[in-house]
Length: 511
Image: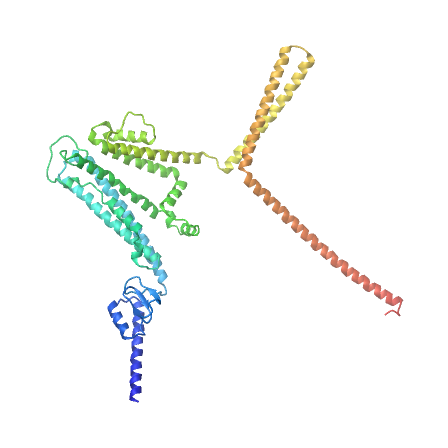
């Protein structure tokens, strides 16, 4: 009895431990956090409790490592599927998408602010304040501050993007999202956004009374390498405009529309900036291309002015830079103005390449806008056919008339000059008649090529309709023949019955 009581108490103790472990697991599934070392200590006491490894996996009996059941998104945290988790995921995804859009818009605004401050600093520095003054320091500090804010916004955008990746892939480990391509893209973006001119920090508080203006807000006694470096940093700040395509993608109606996304997913369409740009070029081609050309013209003109300012030539002024960029963009090249510096030549070369590409797009858009649609082509060619038919009838009447006049001149045997004149008019009328017939044949060949497919479709529809009508008529005839055969069989049966009755009455002996 005492031993049995001890066994019962031991069993109750184990049951209590099992119950405590199960309640502990439920609390962790609801979101509670426990230390991994404490969980390992509890599992060592009883082998029936689940063994929780610190690497984020749950197994049974701690012995068979192949029986892995539930992965963890974070070490020591179980992601059990509860009712309503999908709704929470959708809600979190919606908030992350909105945050990503907001961070992208803020990053673009900060990048544009830094570029605007750089342009103002480069334009008014030699005239309003001197290099190394407090105003130059304040503006340069503002550019650096905007650059720092831009870097923080870029990191926040990619953080939201990684969290969105985690939610889309059912809360996997965040390190899976950090592929080599993503790391390279983030590093390249940070490198592009960190570029800004820093020449005003090198000699602060010194003033120069020189009347000649430097190309940038730096001292004239600095070396040419420093001036070229400051010029290169100022020009490369325009690389921040890559954020425009991201903002257009995230704020486009194509990406925000659920109908677009549903139909695109069914057709394996990747909603990238290329697809959005194609949609914009198809919906608003002239407006999109005009905005791009205008902004490119202004930016390239200012960059050329900045590059050519140190030469003290005509290309260092904004008006001549606008003219040079325009004639280079249109691939005209009058030769009256030419860049001198290597930076200016590079800007003009890039402008010429973009001009060729934009000219090709302009030609394609103009051709598409000027082309007739299907209905307009039908109307136009129909009216041309009617006009040519009328002219052919008139030409045929002229041929008959000239034949009659020539025949009458032959009968009269009068003036030979009149006979030759009628022959000449007859040959001209025949030539006009043949020419019009050739034009009508070419026009009808073109129209037939244009309407071959619709015509064949109409012919097939007519044939299928005729076959259906013939099939229905044949079915009705077969049904009527069956009814008539049934009536004939009934008549024959009635006739045979009447004959048998008559024969019985006449020959009662026949039974």
